[in-house]
Length: 301
Image 1 (cartoon, rainbow, N blue to C red):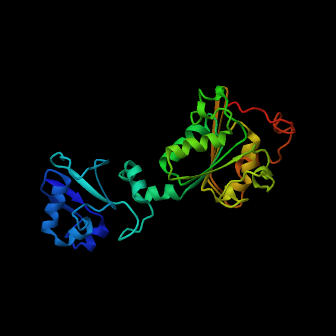
Image 2 (image 1 turned 30 degrees about the vertical axis):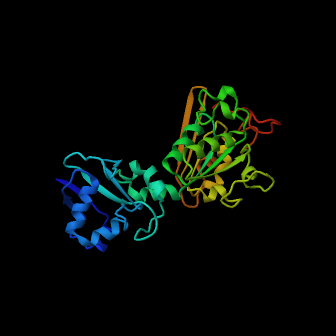
């Protein structure tokens, strides 16, 4: 016997005896028709007047979308999901987004609520090189709603063997614009904003002199981010982000030649973040080679 699990709100408005019901049939459509014969209040919620299933419902089994007229294995368990906003659904994930993230949504512990949290999140990625490339790709694919990208460099052919967000078609382009093009192609449902700059002092990010600005209402971009990740070998860049992200969870990673380093900083009330505790003042003595140079050194990642 096959079973169909209905959302609690649909079971309530359709006057179903319970959310999970057994049904007979070889296809999804036959299962639903069988249930509609037994529960008259269900048909108007699932079908249009022309007997077509309504677009704002998705049907899944074992994490896969189920087509209405394809044969089902015996003993299938079907879950009915509210896909689009409007009607009795109050979520903000669109039909397209639910179809895109269905593998997330059907995971225990994630669901629509977890995917909505990802959509509401804002992540600032500093560096789009060897580390920032895969990080930004996975953040975009996962559905993080707003990504900020900061990098001063341009794409060169020597980058392509490790900086996987870039490609031959974007050689010579600023890395943030190259990354934005790839990420928007990967997921058009998210917002991406960029700045081409070397983050070497707090005013680099928060000053008003730059003509290329991130959105999220300058000059508070990093304060609006729910997570920031600094993916550069440049300690000054990580240090410069510390004051604006002290109240947020923050990660910093770098790889210099073969020496990886990673830190995750969690906020502590009324205390400075770890980078500025370790190095209270950035200077040529505390950060040799990264201060006072007329031309910034090339990142090694």
